[in-house]
Image (cartoon, rainbow, N blue to C red; front, side, top):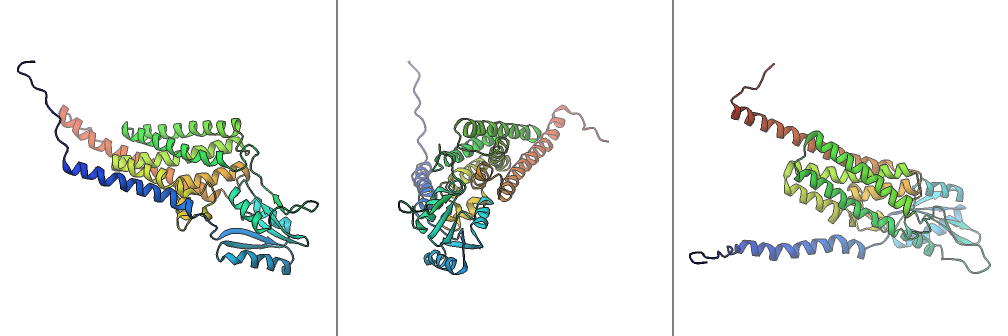
Length: 338
């Protein structure tokens, strides 16, 4: 049209272009380090396993396990019954029993199919035809998920869902009681939905349904409350850092596809301090071991959840204290005093 001109968008600042050129490769490198390095360096590191049987025969088995240096943390048991009990209590991932017919591996594929396979190899694998089996799965994974793939795949969606819930609470500006109610409600519903899918539909968890639902819910709350709390304190930077900690670090450091002791140090330990790792350990405990060894992951998840809820509550109090003087100054009314 005459007298009018189309305005061109302003040229991007050179610093913005430089930031994109440097930031994207840095994120790619960080993601590859977090995901690829643990996967490429998976190996036993002080993996708790048991050795049972007569002292002389058990000593030879222990010597065989010690050939790999610090690969195994060996626990001695008097007999096979004691070793089985330790496996069911999640004190060890498995055990090797010295018998007159050779070493007999007691495994728990529900705890870690990767570790179970490693113990079978240590015990010499399946025996030949016509002889007793050299491997017994004490706590077996469900037949529908023998490798634990479905359970392992549940951790990342729960973490992403928790990040989304926490980010929504922060972005929508929910603080105080409203934020706490939103986080608790979304976590409870997420836990029920996750238990319905994994237990009732897929059958990849076989424990108590309500315990599994509560575990999923606590896991979700630990993630969502942490992200919302960091968002309330730090804004968008807090949301981003929380999401990075839960997804970029928490998921690959969780050890859910193998075992925390199979990851390079100190990644396995760090992973158990983050909600995805603690959540995965808790789900295995309640899903297959009647809640054995669940105290530590419950404590970790509770600390994250309480800290996040505290942050959003404090953020709500800070918001109220900054809004009341502004409203009183606009209306010209004094704040009532006792």
